[in-house]
Image (cartoon, rainbow over all chains, first blue to last red; front, side, top):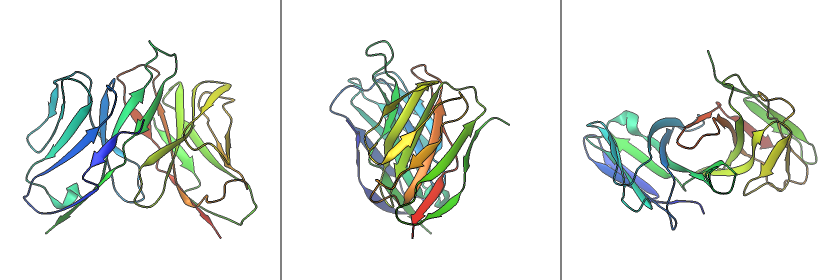
Length: 115
Length: 113
């Protein structure tokens, strides 16, 4: 059930771009993206709800494919502050179906930006 | 300000001891969660609760217990049955409504010595 992220780790130079993917074998109700610094709480980046949706701004944006089984996070012209671990998260079993409601997260992608 | 408070931030436990991690939220959220994170690993769901006096096991509930006696509180007990408890523990909460985000506490580091 856990979404799979790729790559597991990536090293960039400042100014380079990166793409992080989040895939699921089943359609996701939504996808949430977070960034976490070591030993700190994850910080919310954005949420996508609709198939085909694209969101974000020039530097950090995300897309959700039409089938809602894959989302990608785009980091453009990376900065040192982008370093951290990125997680995608999703809601399982929307209340409208099974009556349960919980969040699970992907496997994580460690990103390191070098000066 | 509204938020989630976890305590303690750092905790050392001797083998064979039970320890309880506190999680309090003043966001008026119905749902609360506990996640475990190991170095370089993702977030794994331990327990979650959608309503007071009710909770469900997550993916790695063995060796842990929780209670939900009040809406704002969701303490996690790491029992002696948990064989490898050293990890970073995150508490979170959310509205029980699809499409809403989840909010995290600052986390608690547990080390077995």
